[in-house]
Image (tube, rainbow, N blue to C red; front, side, top):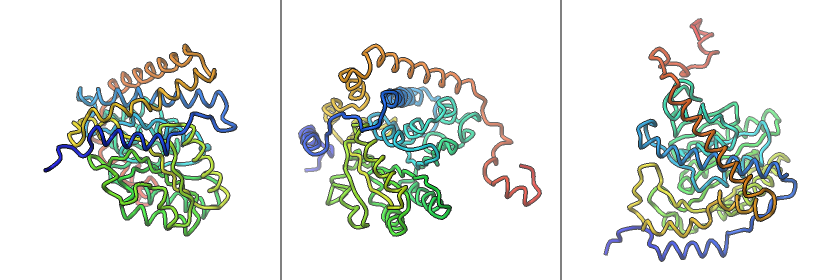
Amino acid sequence: MMRTCSITMEESEAVLEEFKKEVLASMEPPPGLSVEGQLEIYRKMAVIRVFDTRVKELWKQNFIYGLAHSYVGAEAIGVGACAALRDGDYITSTHRGHGHTIAMGGDLKKMMAELMGKYDGYCRGKGGSMHIAAVDEGMLGATGIVGSGMPIAVGAGLTASVLKKDFVTVCFHGDGGTNQGIWHESINLSSTWDLPVIFLCENNQWAISFPYSQAAKNPRVADRAIGYGIPGVTVDGFNVFSVYAAVKEAADRARNGEGPTLIEAKFYRYIGHFVADDEHYRDLASNEPWGELDPVRRMADYLVESGTASQEEVENIYVEAQTAVEEAIEYAKQAPEPSPDTLYEGLYSPEFLQSRGEDI
């Protein structure tokens, strides 16, 4: 008989128990991560949570056009990874790029303006949610095509190698992208040439409506690293410190000329794939047990229980995040629409236009 959903409550609980047994790690800050650094990590996680929660509401109110994909539940991965990088490092993103942009220090007002298609946005309103880029902050761009950020990351790594620079590039991608040909080509080339690229798989165990366990015989993404002669590691994707430590080690290795690392940050997407997803492919109740591992709450609890911050300080950080996001929303609502005469802006580089004697 045909199943009405891919994952039942019983199956989800079994996956959760396996996760707790094999992946879940305690919240222990890595050596060298200061109290200020830990508080900044929580601040960015809170901003992402508030930002993408409001994005869904704004989309329903028709302030945001096209589709949008929430980073809620994955905050520990983007923030943990980017906190481990240096100024001058780069990342490439996916269709779920809001969190990555914020983690790299993106301007909330420019981000929200971009999502609303306004001229003050990062891409002058032409990129929208799935194609936002903040190059000055080291975010080379999000993309709606699964796997298409990977060769861009390899190109950045090749640039570092040829120019003998010490920057590294983190290539964020999902588990669905690991079965794309470009994934294998990108890792193979990077490993062959020892390029400073970190392939960070955000394994949320779902490729839209298809569970990863049914898409790959071996559900451990990190195991694939052995085929390319590089390190592969699986970390708790709900734990910001686990992600930070793994990326820091991989970045140090890359800067030393030892090539790429494959990191599998395993967690679970307990929200819809995109803002209008009705999640017909799984029992909605099966998402609830995963909520106990909520990364933002885990970080807040750690800060208070460890004495790193008081309950009041933690609450104030979250309120400040809410205020910052609301200010960005109001800014974006008032920002100007793109003028029709800007339609072709950005298609050609200023250097190309100058070579043709045309106006920039």
